[in-house]
Every structure is written in C-alpha cells, then in structure tokens.
Length: 576
Image (cartoon, rainbow, N blue to C red):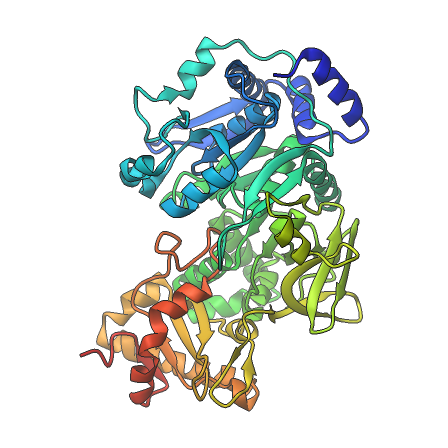
C-alpha cells in the first residue's frame, strides 16, 4: 500500500504535466455543484451526478480498494456498458493507485477469460450488460473462482455479490488520492480484435493527458460543452474523446441507455461536439432519406429560406442542432454521405487514429476538408509512408508497448520508433492523408490480380445500404456482400418493393463498376438476409466489419450464387 508521503512525492513529480485525475480534482473543486454526468435509466428515470457527487463516490470506492491491501499498480478490470459508475470506477482505481483494464461488454467468454488472465486482474467491476445479462451465469462460471466482484448500479449481479452502493456507504471518502507520475502506467486497453487474439495496449497517464490537451486545443472545449457517450468506453475512441475530454475540460456527458432510446438520449444530450462511426452517420442519412419525398430532398440543397429552414429542421430532428464540430472515423465514409451532411451545414471532419496512439494522429481541419481524406498530422505527431505504402506514425501519445509482449511490441515499431499502423495510404499536396486499404486485406483473385476491398466498399453510398463487404479470394472476379438498412429489409418482404430494390442495387453496382479497374469489377451483389451485429461477431465493438468472420460465414456459397448468373441475388437463393 502507498502512504500519503508516497502520494505527495508522486504529485511533485507529476506537477509539470497534470494527469486526467489531477484535472478531475480541479473541476471537483471549482464547480462542485455543476452537473457532470446525466444517466437515463432503463425504468425511464434520469439521474444527474454533480462533480462533487462523482468525486465523493469515487473517493469512497478508492478507500475500499485500498483496504484490500493489493500490491501497488494492480490490474482492476471494468466490464459493462457505458454508465456514470463506469467512469467513477475508473477514477476510483486511479485514486487507489492501481491500473484500469476496460473489457468490452460484448466480448466473448473466451476473450473475457483471456483478458482477466493475461492482465492478472485482481478485482472486477461488473456493470450494465444488457443482452449479456441472461448469459451472466455462464460467464460467471468462466471467471476465476477467487476473483472478487463488485456490482455497479444496473449490474445483473445480485446479493450476496458486493454492491457498489453498499461499499461506498460503508467507506469514508479518500482524502489523499494517489497522484501518479505522467510516466506511470494508467490503463491496459485490449484491442477490439478484427483478427487474432486481442493485445493489451499500455497507456501512461501522460499519453492520456497529452491527448486531452491536444484535443482541447483543437476543439476549443469549455465546461459549457456537451457530449453523448454511446460507443464502448473500453475502446480508445470513446475513452479518449469522451472520458479524457470530460475529465480534462470539465464537460457535461450524457449517456445512452440503449439502442431503442438512442434518438431520445441524443435529443436530451444536445451535443455541441459529436463523434460517430460511419455506420451511424449512414443510418442517420438513410433514415432521413427514407422519410423525405424527392422534392424535399432536393430542397435540402436549395439556397433559399425554405431550404435553410428544412436543413435546420433535419439537424434538430437528429439532435444535432447545437453541434459545432462533428467527427467521423475508424473506417471510410462514402463521399456522397459526407457531401449530404455538408449541404445540411454539418461539416464532418474525418479523423484517423489507433488504440496504440490513443486516437491522436490525423484530423481534418474545418474549412479544409477534402472528401475521402482524413486530414493532416496533429501537433506532436510525425508520419510517413513506408516502402509498400504502409502508414507509419510516431506520436507523443504513443503507447508504452503491448503488455507482457515485448516481441509484438518490437515487431510493431520501426528501428527509429515509428508505429506500423497496418494501413496503406497516400498524401495529397496539402498533407492530407487518404487511407487506401489495409496491408493485410489485399486478396488475390483467380486471375492473380490483387484487390483492395475498402476503397470499393466506400463507393456503395445509397440510402438503402447499411454495410458492404467486398470479397472473393481465388474467384475470377470479386463480389460484394450487401447488408440492407432495416427499412430496406422490410421492403424486401413485398414483391413490388423487392423488385424496385433489386433494380436500384443493380444500377448501383453498374455505377460502382464503371469507376473500377477491370480486375476490380464486381461480378455481383449478394444481399444478406440477417443483419450483421456485434453480438454475432460480424462487427467490432465500434461497428467495423470483421472481414474474416464474414468471409468464413459466406464464402462457401459463392459458387452457388455465381451459378445463378444474375447481378443481384438474395442470400437465400440457390439453397436446396
């Protein structure tokens, strides 16, 4: 256990570079009665937590953690959906002098077991699990039997499991939180794992604080700014953009309760700065296009009072009327959709970053966006294109390395310390980066030609299309697996609607193929029957497609669909 003298010495060493915990303590002191976190609950109630209340609960739990006598810098994990107590748990871990290990609530039992074992987790906070709640008994049997568990509010753990509220009530607030040095390990973040076993990315208090300082400078954050938290806090994008900025800049965060309440929660949050993944921007776009008749859609682009009123109405309907900065990232967004938002008056700023650099690499600048590019390097970042086209980055937010894996750490870095991103790219004359695909996603057709799927997938911008996976290794030509939007799936049930959709998708395929090289042209589009989801393993927690899982599920039937000889087929066609 650490002593107050140890904490004071650490504080002196960290004084030159305030950590996120130190920034939290600042806001706790200067705006104690201001609402910090707003949490809608499943029963329809909404709970506000002030900065004082957040600090009080975190300090009380930190006292309990210290009472356990764990070795300094022990790994303590958080498993659960985003909630106010997720952030309080994270703060309590740091206040007690330990290291936080977030775990995706959608992770498989095998992945959860791997993380708990690999990180040598000493205690597990279990929060809200939603669809995982009914599987808790199975999950619990997979946990180490001696692992202490603490249930956050809304957790499926019932008595006699240790409950957050009971422990907090029984503990006095910790008066002298441990203040780590900037170089100390703060968290181990396990990659979402599009392929392979997740790696434990180690970040220091310094890398997280440097991100928040840079992000604050870029966004011009003040305590008046509002964010919505809905992407997994276990992922670097949400951990950096929401939690780190919240702690560093005194922002107001509202949580999303569930998918069903997302629209209402977004309206409640009224974010002034908003980040989303391409899939959600696509769903917003498709939803509006499905509701607006053609004349109204044309009016959106009109330079008139009526057009301006409609644009404001659409943004207000989305909950984005107060949004002054909007970001997109993690995967390419079709250019048509980016341009549609621009016509609404919302300039989407494409950003690029990875868990290993805590999402601080390249940002598009307002007024200098080039469609299809994700911006220039940020302050504190060096980047270059290596032989073979791979993007290499060195940032002041760069990870300490992969936990207990020096070999993988060495393999991920060049001799001069640049991180090998695994992405291929190129720069324009203004220094804006364009991602041209993944180094390992190239596949070879039966004609021996290489195809990069991501740029082709990016061309499938259409209000009826939610996601696309281009594949076809070993086949004469590649083809596309297409997941329709929910509205389009409903139309497929009707004969007339189905015929109209198939015609639209055939025309879309022809348009895409017209812009491709001969060896890239798609032989057909296969419309998948079931939506791809995180729970089923087809999407990562940030809603990127898991190409290997999708290909394993569908490729065995490629010859059957090809034999039908049509440009657009339904997945179920050709079955015996």
